[in-house]
Length: 259
Image 1 (spheres, helix red, strand yellow):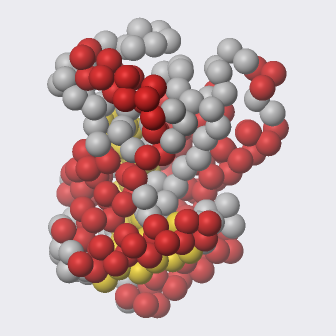
Image 2: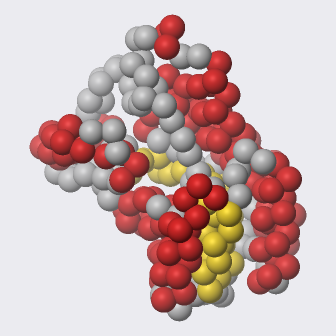
């Protein structure tokens, strides 16, 4: 896929990994990047859109929630109407709750509903909404998963299950939308972002140091490394239904339940 002149939508694009993907797409020559984000963090989306424009692309902050199917359909339609086409969809929007994995009683129906609605059904809604336009351009979808979808542990049990399901959704969509649209995923391990550090910054820094000390590549991923993988998959014209792990090689050392 040639990104020069492309039009992309990035959900959850205002901060962290999503922001890095938006900027990477702009720097790669995309004509326009639609920065989707919930209205609760509108300023972040607007700032990222402005920074995209500063990189030479047209940045557009589009405020809506991926849990709203009608809003997802409007976003796809409005993007095509504004820019004339759609080439790329990156399903990055995600949420979690921090719940000890062994505390099953702490996992209520609300946690399941919220996490699956954003992480899994949100990706499906946006993909379904964007599919007709992507078929017209021979476009591509990249879903942002997690190492938590491949092994136990992580922020919570529902989060890991949602990301495992997202990997299967990737494979199913790759078959359903072929041959016009390719669908792949990126599964980051530990990533140094605001989202990860917001619970306990000191504990996060300590974990990052320990991670880097054990990882084969001796480093913790930043949001820009995930963006690199996204752009790499977009460039691979004969790859679909695949998942790329971005964790400095740490998955090579994982045991059954912990690094």
